[in-house]
Length: 577
Image (cartoon, rainbow, N blue to C red; front, side, top):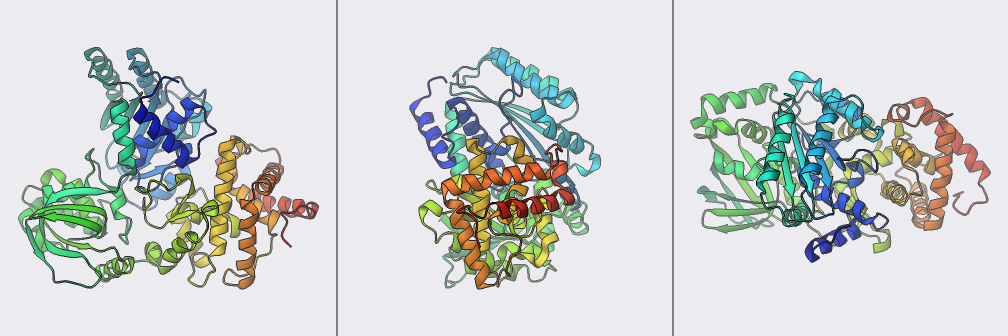
């Protein structure tokens, strides 16, 4: 590995510690560092770089690949199927990263990188580690009218050197971009050389709170309200509203809509089509034709008409905001009604969300992230000591700016839904689904207000321990397509097939004991090694693929094999009675 400057080396070491990647070789750790710095800010949920790392020996030019649709990382055709069922139009971005530790920008290698990207799209013969991404890409490109626009292709060449706009290298980049543009697959092709200074800035940005600056001239300050630090109502010109909803690259900040009760319903939705019509035909009257947007922020700095908001969410107006973004070139005469409430009291924020959406007919599953149960889970996870601490991410990216939070210990809502479904509901075959769809399928089987919290925590511990064992090599990568069946096998092996009700004291006690066993390093390794054998035996020699993992028959066989293994393991110290 080349010599890093002291600042880049310090940031890299901090990243390795937070992600617990000490087992990686130096150049591999740098690849993960580059991937996190580039991709994490583009997502509205936390990123595990294992999900985008291509793997060693795959190609000479691609180290990381992320396919992002509507602000979410997707990794399988199944997840895409679930996303398309919503009826919304789909926005697609491809992110390819090549990371070099040599400290030099080499024209030949930069060109090779772009050629590998072009080959990925044009050739059917790709390395095995890219095969699933290729299948997903083929399916995405066949969606036609469902795509909001042709995909954007982003290429990042990352090295800890100094980028100086060298004319020779600029010409190489221009040629590479042109060759990809000639495929007519993309709405835009962007090649970004990233040197040490840019990489440092990107990494810091990936850890910083969401912050925006804009001018709010036409406003009224509302009277003092208990629990609310500041509140304003007024109208914002379209140009200033775009300052709030767009990031530094001009993309939509999708993460700011996490607390809105509905995701964007698409451009063809009847209501949204009318919003677009009013923007284009009655822009100067938009502020009296639209209910506007409500923004709840944790902090604000106000100097006259100049506002800075930190850690904010649009809790009402997701549809309006998305349509305004799509019509961003037609906002010259448009003003938007806006309410801004600054409070650090989560209960008040929830009340505001409920009140501003009270006129909407909203399904129960749309509101689950706002339920008190989610807050209870977050608080419960926080009660454990540092060694057994996991961080439940109730709100998107809520731990992003907390530097001492090990990111490997952050549990997202999607991860908790999938791990609980696998461990306690015997539904690992459904876990590859887009998680909001999985939640709606499971219905009232999880997140019930009377459920004891230990079961959710122990499911999260099982997932965390499995990921740690994958990273260390104890569990082989070949098992990753059936990782959720591993969790199912672990529970059946340690706890048994029979469960008490989730609201019972007996289940609370069992789940706590289950988690304690999983935290024991020796017990955990032995348990998961046994579970791996169970899963392999249950496969009956079939290749462990994502498609195979969806079979209900395989799920049933895992439970049966685990019951047999449990009966043969009665003497083990990690078997619960």
